[in-house]
Image 1 (cartoon, rainbow, N blue to C red):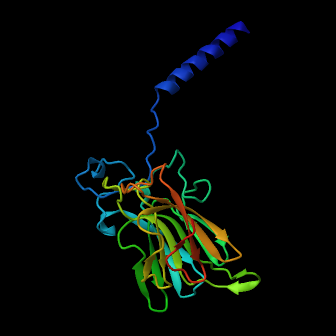
Image 2 (cartoon, rainbow, N blue to C red; image 1 turned 180 degrees about the vertical axis):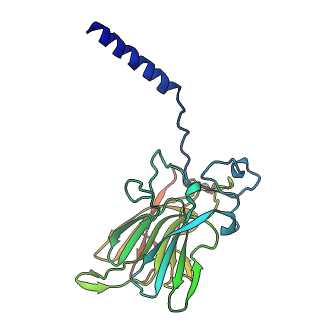
Image 3 (cartoon, one colour; image 1 turned 90 degrees about the horizontal axis):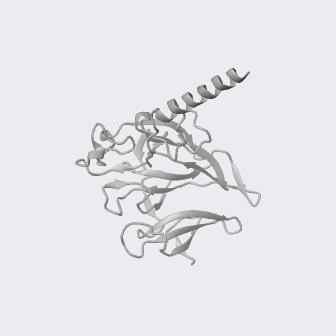
Length: 262
């Protein structure tokens, strides 16, 4: 009995030694796009989640992952992600905002506001819009960006106050500019908020460019979205912790530039 205990104890010690000497996990990197082709992070042996250049999609390995059915029968959206080889884990979890990772990068669709569905992106570089009637395709963003949230007309008929409601536009929160001038587009930059018409050809910036959008809240009585955004007071292109947060409101009946509430 004593001999068995000693053998078991020796086995556990040896196992712990082998584990400690094994390969260590590298620190996960957040999603980003590199704008500087001379940056060593953009070479063949670069970090997995940096991309060389930002001039066109031809420079970046991408792939379409799903067709989004919208509430407008002739209008369909296609999600364009970085290719699987370029995808990295975020915070130790390979998630695309659709629960546990199962190899599908189509994102999470969530019913959040009447008539509007939401898709959260991770390494989502753009959204392609296709008009079935005109047989025409165009990108919401011509250059690769980091799209965080896409609001689009819900496919299933929805209602507000027991009355049918239909939306005919798209709203996107996105990192689309290297605002802090570090040659990268990532979460350190200011997060923008845009409205697109049904054809996705007319783009309107809803919150001033010197703000970084943080979150939103829905007001069902007024069919209004409240947008919380951090003001870039020191103009360094970063939403610093101590900078003030302001609140804007946006009518979802007919979205236009958001008005400041607080």
